[in-house]
Length: 117
Image: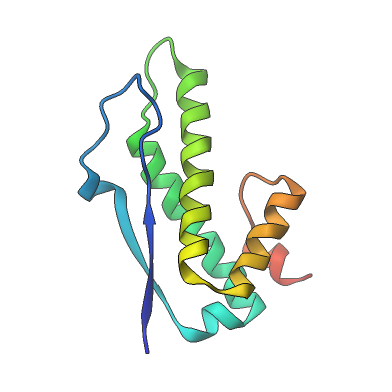
C-alpha cells in the first residue's frame, strides 16, 4: 500500500503577497518501510525538510531591505511545515527523527548522519 505525506507551506510573512495555495502543497510518496525503518525514516525526513524548504522559499521570497525578516519567515515556515507533515504520518519512527533534530537544534538533517546513530 502506497501512502503520501503532504507538505504544506504557509506564508508567514506579511511583507509579501503569498503564492497561490495550490503551488505550496507537495505530496511525497511514502512506503511502509519509510515509516518503520530508522534509516528509511531519516531519509524520508530529509525529503520532507527539502520539500518544505523549497516551498517556503517560494512563499517567502527575499525582499530588498527586508532580508532578515524573509529569512526568519522562511525558517518559521519550514519548522511549521515539517512538524505538520511529521504529525500527519503518525509514525513513531519519523517522530523520533524529528524529536532528535529538534533536541540537537539542527537546521536540517543529514539522512546518513541520522541513520548512523
